[in-house]
Length: 113
Image (cartoon, rainbow, N blue to C red):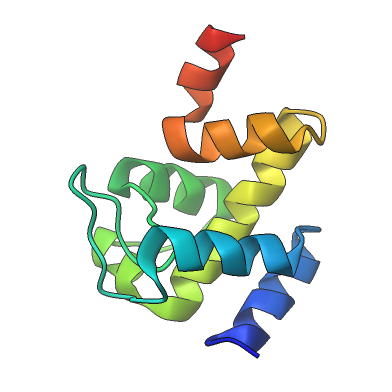
């Protein structure tokens, strides 16, 4: 059992993402610290960049989204799982490309391809 397990399972299933992958990303990116901020400005459990967060919120139709919402554990997991599901679809279920895109960005990943 890990922290935030129910939210991880709920949003992983909703977005057809492996919950163990999500838990591993959270462990690696923030060590389950919802207040974590990286050197480059990624925020929260799943270390989502604010610009990416705004794009995700727009795509998900989240009204009244603010960058500070990324510090909310449930919101961060929900958005991170949605983004992983979107990347999985975009990169045709190629886990290596999904992980590269999650870390380097979608645009950069396409440039490298």
